Amino acid sequence: MEIRNFVIIAHVDHGKSTLADRFLELTGSVEPRKMREQYLDMHPLERERGITIKMQPVRMIWRMPNHPHLEKNQPSSKNQAPSSSNSKQEFVLNLIDTPGHADFSYEVSRALAAVEGAILLVDATQGVQAQTLSNLHLAQKQGLVIIPAVNKIDLSSAATDECAAALGELCGVLPETVLRISAKEGTGVEILLHTVAARVPPPYGACKRLKGLNVATSAELLRALIFDSAYDSYRGVIAHVRVMEGVLRKGDRLSFMASKAACEAEEVGVFVPELVPVKELGPGEIGYVMTGFKEPEKVRVGDTIAHAQFKRLNALNIAALSGYREPEPVVFASVFPERQDDYGRLRESLNRLKLEDSALSFEPEESAVLGRGMRIGFLGLLHIEIVAERLKREYGLTLIFSHPSVAFRVKKRGGTDYLLIHSAGKMPESHEIEMLEEPWARLEIVTPPQFLGAVTSLLGDRRGFLTQTLTLPGERLLLGGEAPLREIITDFYDALKSVSRGFASLFYTLAGYRPADLIRLEILVAGEQVPAFAQMLPREDAARIGRMRVEQLRSFMARELFPVSLQAMVEGRVIARETIPALKKDVTGYLYGGDRTRKMKLWKKQQRGKKKLKEMGHVEIPPEVFLKMMRQ
Image (cartoon, rainbow, N blue to C red; front, side):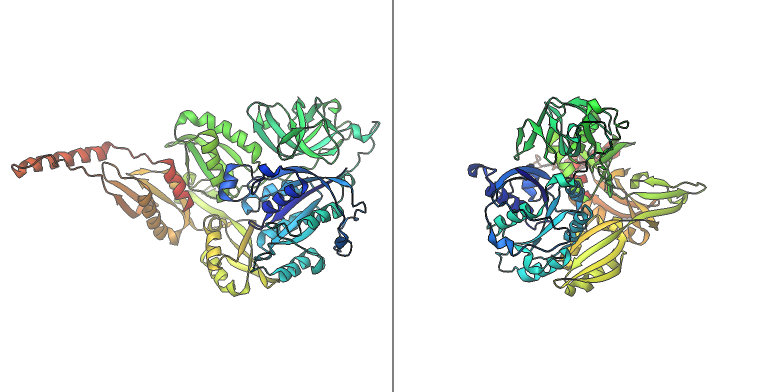
């Protein structure tokens, strides 16, 4: 049986997971009684939110039927592989379903390095989007065979021909060769699968044979790329691998080239999509290996697995696989356990979570108010929400999250080196700063022409500007621009969708540091500073945002037995204030008559008690309030 390794890439909500469902049904990989929508979205959060968060591999066996229609409609492309002439051959199809949201683009880049082909899917009702272009560029850099397909042709609002023309121009093929499918109805899905088997090259041609080795055959050597991993409480770390060279068998003694760790393969197997053991994984196959490691740091995504008997790898001139570029965190947040006794659990939980989410980065941090915690780097706000929810559900942790912030570069007066500050609470005082720089983002916005003015105004309001305007096929504009990163990571995407009636899409990358005039906004609750609420703002926006923050906090917090003051402060000056009124108890309710002085005595006693409680009382802010403030 021949092997075909491929992925499905697309913008968010363009139908990747639904198409994967049809592939599973068509190949009989899942029993009809077990089939459900978005079958490969295994995590409960994925099913609740209706989005793919983790890439998910699956192995399918398919006997390709005859399709004469394809012989006259083979796309003409520079990277086209020779068409398979054996129409009755059985194929092992290794599919990796990938996320579509920009916060999880690192998952896509890792999946692309493990395959030879990609289905580029576009929604016929939305056309080419920003993430479509980004994923296409990533696939082209990997040299993959790209199969363009237009999805949702069954909808009445579908502009199928226009979308096919735009997609064909992007991929360098004729519009009539772009496949039209309906993943929901199953229309054209079998032809698409036939095209994958015919056009995607087998993995053997992509494997470079080792040269100059005093070994009988290169098949005796092993080089396998770790493209993902997971943790099992009983069996330890499970490495997801793509075998590039050699054969991986159960019982093999394995060496990890980057971490220098060694283990015995307790089990090897494939994803169907459940874990199913097999005797061996040959060249080009995708599967898993049970390492037995209880220490997550011994298995790194991007590492190369080799046989331990060839431990003197350098002497044999065996080079490690290129692996992956380390993801660069975009936004940072300080995380503290509500109970300091949970700090050890937090650290252990993050180590295990990093196995499944290699884009996560963290290091210890201490706060005089909140105690020990972690400063965590994320790829966006959605990434923060997913990690926070997983830590709560899977590990039972109650956490306090600081307001998300970007990393600032600060040069102190009299100093020579720049300091990298990840948290507004750690920012030096204004009089100590000689130079402050903030990160900027390079934007790619795809929008219909009628929303050009609204998008330009929105970008201007966020202190950004346009750098170029290009016309894309299908009456779309590609707007290039730049803006401060802190303006992009909060609610810019939602605002962009609002001004464009949902038609515009966004993709951004980092564009370096530039000087900025920013000050620190601090929030005080009952006279006590809360570092988690601190944030860096433009000087001219401090008063407006300060009022808005204390109003939001007032609506989120519960009332206490005494009045609670909420203050926004900048450079030692209070610029906004709100007061949460005290809970009132009718201390005279049981009196049914008599002199009014009896009531007055009780009221004055109550006032003295509230005054004393206000002086001595401490306000506990629930973790839910921190998360709500983070989302605003």
